[in-house]
Amino acid sequence: MALFDLLGRHWAMGILWNLCEAGPLTFRALEAKCETITPASLNKRLKELRAAELVHRVEGGYGATVLGDRLYDHLLSMADFSLEWADHLSQCD
Image (cartoon, rainbow, N blue to C red; front, side, top):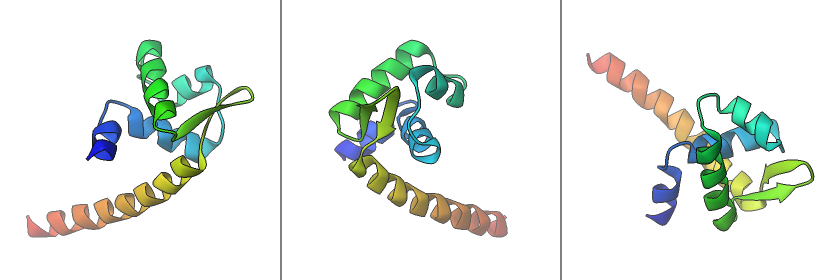
């Protein structure tokens, strides 16, 4: 449940997703990728994701850890499932 709590926080999953998709990013580049996030929120989520060892500091910014990359792989599976689920629900209408 702790993982779902962390990922359910505003922008936590989006930050990890962007770091895994784009590779290491500076704070400003990550902020731009997340579009509507405030600098304070980004800073807070990065601290939480770093404490969970899903994100770490790298030269010039932030990147996903090995654990973060593994979690991202699981999130991709959930994304696939969500598309199947949406299709199923649309057929039920």
